[in-house]
Length: 282
Image (cartoon, rainbow, N blue to C red; front, side, top):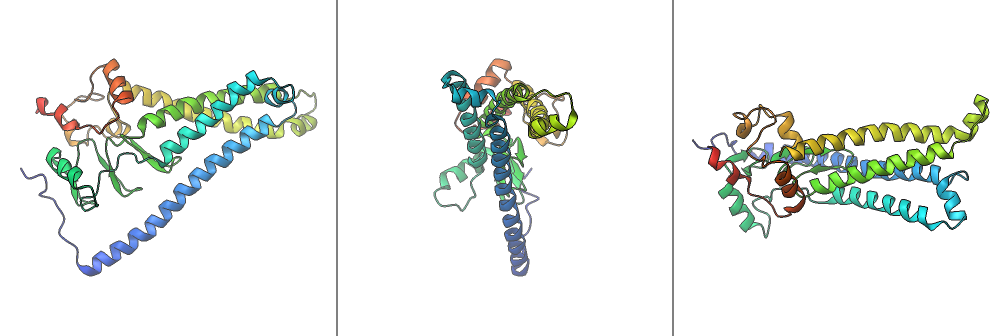
């Protein structure tokens, strides 16, 4: 059976021009959304952290005034690491499958053809196992997990571990900020004075609770999937994916046990040839 039997016919010149114009417009829109997401994350984080830390009743503000460097050493690196991991996951190549006519990718293209039995009609080329075409990025991504609008990037084979670390440190940072906001608030028996003192802290608290719930749920879901050798796409679309249809739900040929799954996820930095794990089951 020819895996490329459904390969689309070449488009006419006019169709190619129209498709190219549409891609350019979509590309500008998607680029704007990526930049907007990164700016929104930065501004929101800076606003919440600043509103809490620069309050004169804040533990961090008092630590600066009293030169209590222990509290600062415990808090500032947490903020820096969280921001660094966000931007690494956001700007890093998630594992794009090289376009066949990209310069310098001839060897990789030959490898992709050799290892693949699948075809991407949008990229018009062979597609490695566990890859999926992301319409937001307009590229195929190796071991595709999902496209994260908050990152403005896909989560795939190369940046998934950084995304997980970002969720972990962001969760700790949110909990720490919630603790600081609670300690910073001032008591009052009347509503209006209480809102005058704590209005901004209340707003920050709502943002932190909503963000904390979302990040915690995401972190738990990804830990579960990693332990079972799955990606979000494979978990959600299990019954639609060709190489998983004959497997029970939440079961894949890539599940090597909890310990090895964690080892592969955390320590295997090179691109994997996932085809070799399915050959023994075909």
